[in-house]
Image 1 (cartoon, rainbow over the protein chains, first blue to last red):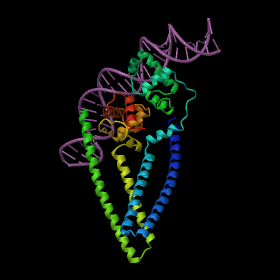
Image 2: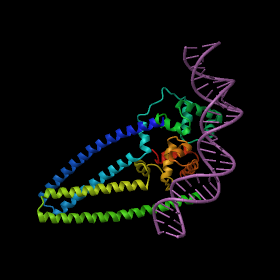
Image 3: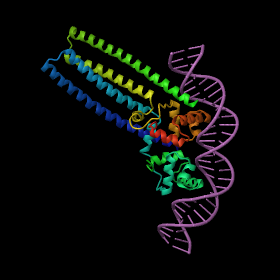
Length: 166
Length: 166
DNA sequence: CACCTTTTCATACTTTCGGGTGAAGGATTT
DNA sequence: AAATCCTTCACCCGAAAGTATGAAAAGGTG
């Protein structure tokens, strides 16, 4: 089960990377065109107003330096997110994950689930809702059954993926 | 004891940032000097061998573009190692939400935190990272101390608010 | 090298969580 | 009225999580 999850997330993330790559190729092409246009207009000024050659070269240098830095930062970040094992895997899983049938939490269960996601203990939830600890335990166990999980942290994750909370 | 540890790590990390910053300033200066030298030598060839002006400008553009990309990547990476693992996290943390002093989780702690957020039990995390359960317990307790929480669910909530995860 | 942080691990103890089972009162639907 | 679901509560037991304390090895820094 764990394995299937992993492969799924890997595949989807690869697809996303491809898309991002194409995006960047197009983006770079546009930027390059823009740069050449800027260069040409600069050239116009060069001949029209006779800027010093040094200044001209300096401007070009600065422009391309800035462009390069920008691209570098962009690509650096992209590489970074691609290489990261944790966060991207998770976000990638969010999209293609299957929702387990017509699960419906009751209103009370949703309420308890929200408290769980806020980091409250069962005792705290019981106190806040003016019911007994056992009641909250019942609710939590029902929630776990419906979400098909075994722990409250998993319940938070699953509920988040299913957009039940947040 | 825990507190002292935190403040110490904060100070040292700030110092490290400063040092790294100075390193990069020097590094950039050197690169700039190198770039100018290259430019001048190119200029020499320009006059000596009468390269076409377009080619000359093109070479300059490419050089500075490469330089810029390199610098951009370097800076992007630098930010990554200094602050957080996730690109959006780091940028987002600065802007919107209050960060409780200079909290810095170690890389291993961030790793464990991600596993916690994914709903894994301590035992599962221990198995996945090939360390003992006690080690994970140590990490989790350190995380709780640094995030000033008492439970793993609270840690998830806080980390999410602080954009340390997701 | 000394110092500090990080990462690792251990032991022992307490608290919280989760699983199983059962049940009672209320609301809604059939 | 019977069936069903929701909400409430109880008890017990095992598993997981959390607390406290200590310590040792590895890596980086002055």
